[in-house]
Length: 349
Image 1: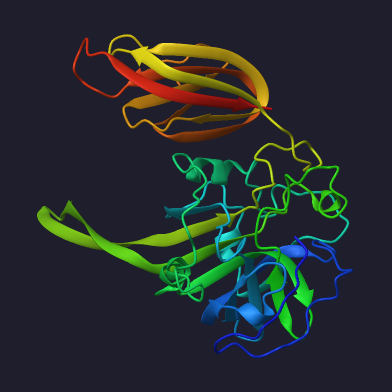
Image 2: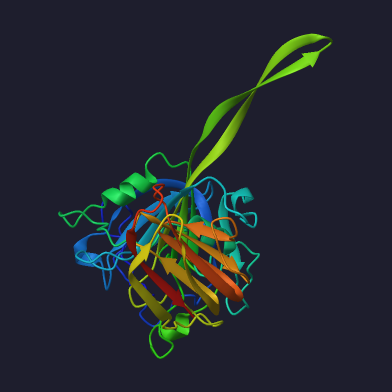
């Protein structure tokens, strides 16, 4: 989205002039800037421009850079996802990169899925992580309109931050468009031209790893010995945002598409009698249920069941890739013969 950027709040270095309004998102290179957080706050209301931003200052060991994260407004939150994870499969080498800026999609080049770029709709690693995580709309700003407890919690105790978006050089170095950069209506004169695949902005925050000790018993020279090996497990969180106007379904150019929606209300099922849906032929599929009593299974190419599935979830699931998708909804209650009801929504491109 167009960034009218001010650095006028809290301890961040004051800069009073916005970016030139003729500049557009992704007019420069897309990539990731990696470093350590030095300070952060929500910008002052007097200088927020079209949207308020949460401002993060970070340092990569050589250069200080700024990160501008769009909030929708101080009264209406931007949809977001917050996912705790250890590893991303695949991560395309992102976590092995040194601190500093890494260009993942140079201006004017074709998308490169293996570069480490993010795509909220197509990245197989992200799709695995967001299983069970529909978009949230809880407030990111508290009642004072000057503080974001969520962001403070997200950045607390961080040791490394990965900021995906578009690099800018205006009164310093920084990253903006740290949000979904596809899904806008193609007919929008302002935002339609900004759409593209494999160029979504987001943040991954890294924390101190959890170290556990694994114990092994071995026989050495006829003597039983105990060996203890420390194992380090990474701790990370992925923070994704989008604007309400942006669709979760896009074409090959990143333009937003209105999906076909199939709503099934008050579905009646039993533990021993799952309900089947489909097949749905598509390359983008979402399944969502607001009921905690149902688990749904998805299979490509053949009927799904609790013992035959490719994907499983109990709340939200997003799939990508052309296929016939079969869905099976199954009660999680273990009481045989108990009658249960649930709602299910299926969306497909």
